[in-house]
Amino acid sequence: MSMRIGYGFDSHVFQAGVPLMLGGLAVEHAEGLAGHSDGDVLLHAITDALLGAVSAGDIGSFFPPNDPRWKGADSSVFLQTALEEVATAGYRIVNIDTVLVMAQPKIAPIAGELRERVAQLLGVKPGEVGIKAKTPEGLGLDHTAIAHCTVLLESLQAPEALGELVATAEAESEEELNAVVEGLVGGRHDMSALGRKVTPFDTDDLT
Ligand code: MG
Image 1 (cartoon, rainbow, N blue to C red):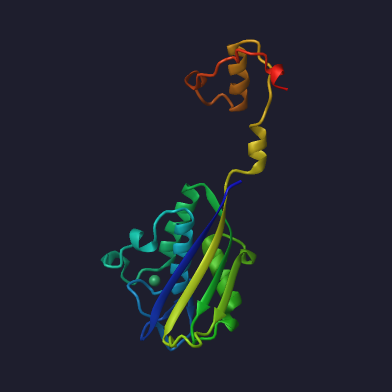
Image 2: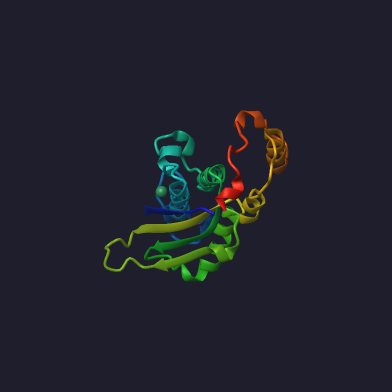
């Protein structure tokens, strides 16, 4: 089974008069986050981590910030696109871990709800999502929200499925060998193109 990791980072400045969106959740706070979209810094970091894990570029290459279509966009749309890229590449999420860095609001009271919402958007269990929070001490960034995310993916091909493809056979002729291979793959493919040949030596000599 193959595994891949991804990492994402994002930052947005706080702005009065806009709702605060974090992880797809509307959070009660005096200020929201400035941005071309809804400014959901957490979903943007998760989206970039997913895209990075399958080497599919970044959020800006899919949704350019100067494109009017994404003005005020719900960031879960970006996340869904990243999930499609992950599925297309043949992977699924094992777990994600995140860190939010912001002076206000306090994340601890809403961390459980945030975890549930992010898990729902990702189609995973809450136990597969980590939400952690820090204050930006010493950074001089009290008016900025920062998000980091790491993600681990595993290939969709199950080990049992691989096991089913492993078989040994004794074939007296090319036709017989093709029949065995055809049986293994369910007869769905044209075997003639594979060019399989009966081995010109006695395979017992190999053992
Ligand atoms: Mg962003």
